[in-house]
Image 1 (cartoon, helix red, strand yellow):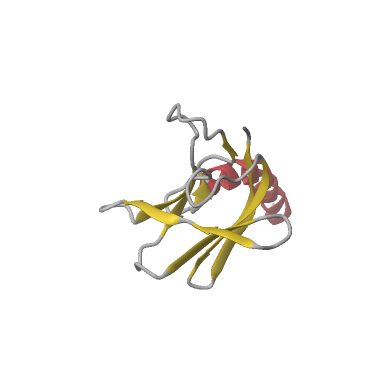
Image 2 (image 1 turned 135 degrees about the horizontal axis):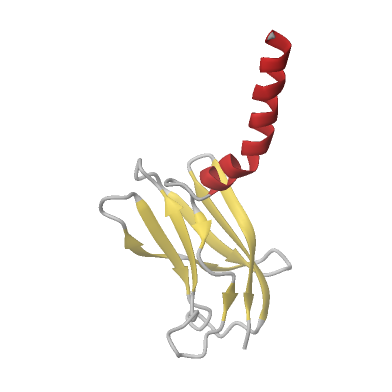
Length: 124
């Protein structure tokens, strides 16, 4: 009987694992990119790259953009702070600080010891 219970519990855990992963990846407290494709054409839709950072301890945040050669080309600026949910939005406008051509760029956001990195694409 104990074996049957153990098998049933294992099967239930395996069946529910994808659902648990989905719930945890969309939960409160997750830092993430809001848009990976940027079209800086002035229509106020996807004109900037935005990274939403969960920062409940108000720690120092370092948010930078690099070209594919590894050269730092921009420092993302703080756009807004969530007063009740601890989310900080950091933004990069490819049209400010020099006109950056279309292509793939690398973002890196450091919050305390956690580092988030990935790519963002500018489409012109």
